[in-house]
Every structure is written in structure tokens, then in C-alpha cells.
Image 1 (tube, helix red, strand yellow):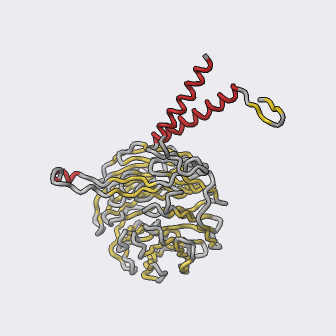
Image 2 (spheres, one colour):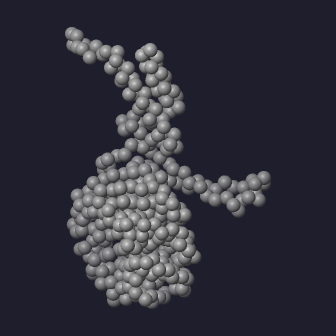
Image 3 (cartoon, one colour):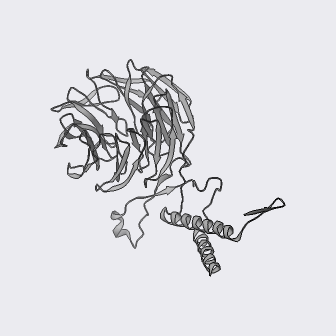
Length: 434
């Protein structure tokens, strides 16, 4: 390259190298466009939260309603805070001790909280106390059915409890060791618990015994799909074990690391495991590895939407979000450890509770944080195919806001045509050389 009279004269060699580079970029985008089904996503290394709310005390636990309209957070100041999706505080409730876990019913009408010291309390959406049930011992995470009719908790006194929203006992079931984790499926049809002795116990909605399996070592966590057809448990020996509803082992997946957090998509097609060395594994309902991602620090919390959109928080203060195919599309660095994350069932709201006293919220209604996945209605049978109607199943499609080449919105034209241009440039360069 030479400069004459203030004008730049570019040599032919440099010009062709530039065109060659552009051609390769076009072809690369074309391939990516083909692989990802018509959309190319560029990772946003720094995503700004839609809003932050400073509670003034370390946030220990969070939850969000299925439609993303109600957010609750529990802090070490012994209070539960409710926020709307714009970040406005709706109310706060003095719980008497630290809320260790929170859950919201599918319609957002009932909030369940496990309180340090052995209490399960329930509140309505306006923060009014509905019930307070004491078990007198430390409790594991609470969970609640979509209808809000049943709250389930396990305790170190070996019992699994089913409680009404008004604080009345429905039933309790005594196991043979401390309960380390317990959860009820969204439809209320099955309750899964894991014990310190490594036993996994399944009960029906009335507390009736279904089955018991040995996982081989102390249970860390359990999770279950909406209808209870996919169950995952993690052990201190580093195994993630998948079971079906009948208790048949689908797959035992060794990670060789402590598994801190689990999740199962509401549709029962994918389970997630997050380890102490910062690795996330996504497993199919048959136990095959769908995808894997290595993050910067130990996974503290995982949440998964109804259609397999995943959010994770780690001890280095990073909130990570993944689409249903495992592509990382959200990455935000907070000031300190992320203690809890939650994603709405529809994927339209993501929240994180942090050790820096803040709740971080990412409004995802336009799919800009994580591409949205929405159900496609099941086709109605016509006379010609009515006999096959019982075999049809709902499908789901991604609905995206493209993150294409930031600054060039809507770059989704005829990629095949661009690819041909790229090939022509490269071919022209080769002819020129001859």
C-alpha cells in the first residue's frame, strides 16, 4: 500500500486478499445460517439487565411466576420481597427467619416459602399470609403444584410433607434417613425425594408408596418434569441418574464432579445438571448428551423453562442463558456470587438473586436474551387423516429476535445467493492468479 498526495492507492494483492476474506466470511455465515435453521446468533458478551433492585441484604433465593409477571426474592434480612416485571416493589413480608427456598404456583396465585428453622409458609399474590406449618427441623427446598393446591417439603427428621396452602397437613411419609431434596411434579401426580443414605423414593399424590431405588451415595438434588415422566437425581459421588415415572433407570451419567444443581424441562424432553467445576450437561430423555457447556465457576443454581430454555448462575457472578439447542445467548457479569436463578415457564422473564444485595431481571418477551420457544398448535385432523389423529403430538418452534451482526439488523436475506457471490470471488481470484 502506498500514499500519494493524501490518497491511498491499494495494491491489487491487498485488494484480492480483502475480497477473499469477505468471501470466506460470507460462506461461513451461510453455513452457520444453514446449521441453525435460518438464524445466526452472535454471543452478547455483556447483556445489560432490564432492571436491578437493591434489597439491601444478600439475596438467597428467587422464583418467578409462569407468565413472568410476579417475581419473589428471599433475603437474609428474613424478608420476602415481591416485584412486578417492571421492577416495582409490590410488597414485603417479614418471615421471622431467613427464607431458604421459594416456589410460585403456575398461575401465580400462591407463594410457598421454606423458612430456616423448620417452617413452611404460604402467601397469596398480594403478600397476605395464608398458612404457616411447622415441622420443627431444618427443611429442604419447597415446591408447589401448578394449581397451588399442594406444597411439598422434605425435612431432616426423615419426613416428606404435603401441605395445603392454608397450612394444614395433607399427609406425611416417614423415610429411613434425612431428606436431602424433595419435589412434586407440576401436575401433582408424583413426589420424588432423595435421602442422605442415597435412597430415592417416589410417592403418589396421596402419599402412597410407589417405588424406592438406591443411587449408591448421598443425594444432592432431585428434579422432575411437569407430568413426572422424567426424573433426575444427583449424588455426591458425581453421578446424574435418570429414571422414568415407574422407577426404571434410563441412564446413569458419571461427571466425576459434585453436581450442585438440576433441572428438567416441563415437556420432559431434557434434563440439566450443573457441576462444581462449572460444567453444564444437557441430557435427553433417553440419557444421551444433547450439549455441554463449560462456565467460569461452580454452578450454584439452574432453572429451565417449559420448552428447555436454560439459565444458570455461578459462584463467579455470571448469569448464563442457553437456547433449547444449547447455544449460549446470554452472558452477564454481576459483582459477586449468583445464589439463585429462575426463568418463567414461557421463557419471557429471567431473574437472578445475588450476593451483592440485588435482584437482576432480564425481560425476554422479545427473545433478545434467549430465543423464545413457543408451542405450535397440533394440526386438526381432516377426514382423510382422522384415523391417525390419536398419534399426533404437539410440536414447538423457536420465535427469535435475530442477534445478527450487531449494527446490521435484519441480515437474513437470501444467504444462498451471498454464498454464491463468495464462491465467485474466490474462483475469480484463482483465475486471476493463472
